[in-house]
Length: 342
Image (cartoon, rainbow, N blue to C red; front, side):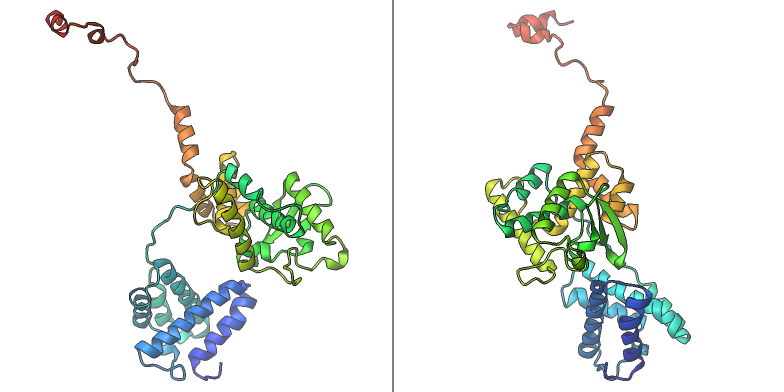
């Protein structure tokens, strides 16, 4: 930054030193926090008439933060979730400032008392096992590109990986020379986890790696999946691949493929199928890389099939027999039946 205010000094240290080196935060999180503070700077300039050259830490108080959050929702028409993301960035910055600018401790603590806005929990989309099978049948396995796409999609489903985790995979992340077959994924916060691979997935991945000569030790640090320019694939590139084959599958069977289906929906699908197969939530949490079991619990709450089957197993027949002889239906003469009724 070219400005010399205390706000510029501490914000630059926060983004360039504290987050990546002390907190080991991912590049995506840093980019998200950066965007949040760009919006704060714009708000201060346009709504409070405070230029970047004059913006200091004293302007980052509870009243201005609340006004900024209200501006996001009312003027910029941001969702509650986006508003909460911006607040999370501000909270993280204030937690950092508690140790760096101690004389303003009360100011930072007042900001930390600002609560996140309640958001609507939307039902997530996932495919049935028949839908996944149809999706994976779409790549043309007679072509190099089709085989590469099948390897990407099948691995993404089998591991329940986030799209960025797949894009970041390197050759040395794969362990398929002997059982147990595993792959190492780096999730949020650069946290590594080992995910087991099933035999069928291993065969697809092994064929792909052999065809592309990725078994050489000199290629250990190269991307596992690269584009036509031999560069690491991007999130957008992988999302486009999924979207293309989802559209093809939807034309064949619209009821199996929802109109909007993303890479994260593929992750949801894997989690639901593991749950329906009886896999413990703790294991699903570890496979998906969730920090808390409460995050994974959304799949148990959403699994209506499991709920129905549990109710059916617990059901006891307490209702009257529906086949009891109903005498009024046998008696054709309603008048005679009524006379005989005691």
